[in-house]
Structure formats: C-alpha cells, structure tokens
Length: 244
Image (cartoon, rainbow, N blue to C red):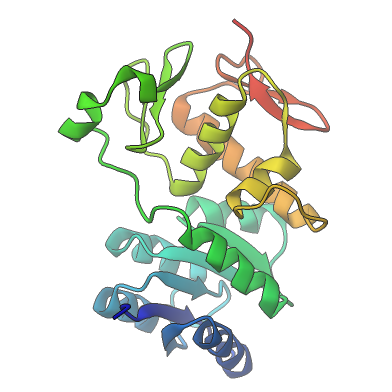
C-alpha cells in the first residue's frame, strides 16, 4: 500500500491557504496548514512533509526567517509562494533555503507541475564525507579542472573541498558538467529543474531565479564571475564550462 504523502501550507491569507491546500490535496497529499511561521515550523517538525509552501509576508516571524528555521529541521521541498517579485526578495528567499519561488497570483496547474517535477529529484544530497562516496568507480564521476561530481551518489568536491550545495545548485552544476563546453541557456536550465526538455512557458521570473541560483553556486564554489575558473557566463544566453 502506497504511503500517504504529507504537505504543509504556511500562509496567513485564509483564501489562498485554502486554495493551496486544495491543489495539494488534489495532487494526493495529506495537507496540514498554518497561518503563522512559528506554527508552520511546528507542523514541519511534527509531520516531516515532503513538500512545504510558504508565504513571505506573515505576522510574527516573516517568511525568510521561517524558511531558515524549516531548513534547520527538515529536507522538505520548500516552495515560496509570494506576491513579492523583486529580485532581492527572490534572492533572499532562495538563500534562506527555498527550492523554488512562485509569484502570486499563481496558476494552480503550474504549482502542481513544479511540485511534481521536484518530487522526481532526491530530497537531500549525500553527506560529502560519506564513505560510500569514496568507493564509487571513477567512471561515474564528472570532472572539470579540479571540480568533481559523482551524480549517482550526489557528491561534489572542488579542489578537495566539499561545498554545501542545495538540491537545485547540485542539479544546475550537473547540467553544466554534462554539457561540457556547450552553452546551456537559462531556459534550458529552468526546464531541466522542472524535469522537462521542451516547453513554451518559461517566465522572466524563472530566468531570474536561475541567475540567483547560479550566483549562489558560484559563491559556494569560491568562483569569481569576472574571472571564472569553472563556469563562465555567455551574456544574453546562459552558461558553459570554461575552456581547458
């Protein structure tokens, strides 16, 4: 018998909270809802949900702090659903630990599709120092100028250091390593995170989110965007590995 999937909705607006709960219930989740960040963190701690949606503008602790507290206790897929659409808000939300950021008003079908895409990705990376990561065959590794990844065990090292990457950062890096020196557009990267290869719909917000994730990835790798060792920007298009 298939185990019931659990979701938590953290949203202070009762109408939107009910809509999010309905969308997730229709997707097969057992939904628990909270109107404040503190109550939401308590629900996440109690139920260990697969998916959590989170508003940013709430009474008490705001969504950014709530995201950090959720991430401290859970590897739940964390989706911010907010009316705040400025780049700084997206940046802070993703840096706080969100896996995705959707701007209100949202389309229920799009939210459900994004969540289903996330469910096809592992909920957590393997611990960087796990013994099994060292025992894998060399043929499974992707490598570029001292940057090494084992996609199967989801481990990464950069000159021997072990950056603490999120799921999204890991998956973006894997796309680039697999592409080699071919340019990968921001649209392609966005679709890859959704588990798609072809689609007519990639919003400007999606493209900005890729830019934020890439900036976070570079920061964790100790990479300079102006003088990159591993990942270079192809202006107006996307990214590729550096030559050599």
